[in-house]
Image (cartoon, rainbow, N blue to C red; front, side):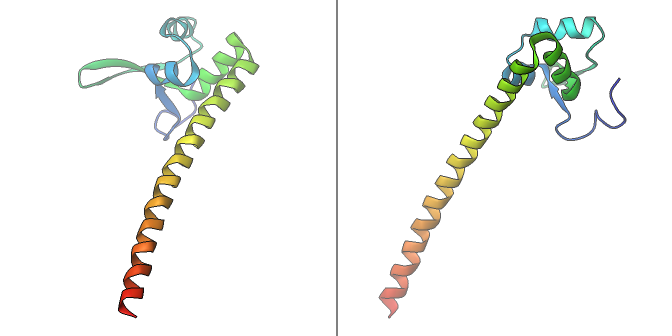
Length: 113
């Protein structure tokens, strides 16, 4: 059973599609977890497209039990690595823009002086 407020806490739930992408599990694997009462779910729909909303902590526990803790750790580390690489890329772009702006400001100050 999900803890009080877990359905409403940011990041505590995810859709079945996000679970497939993030943890590399299939929809059939998720359905099996629901049918064996190891996963709670809620129905949802966005723009008329139905999806299943799952509790992340329950899904991680289920994956660890079914596929092994080593698999879960590997998949979580891969997901974190993707997020870190994406953030580094965004910061590099922002740094490049700031350096360009700095150069423009320095040039404009030199022209005045």
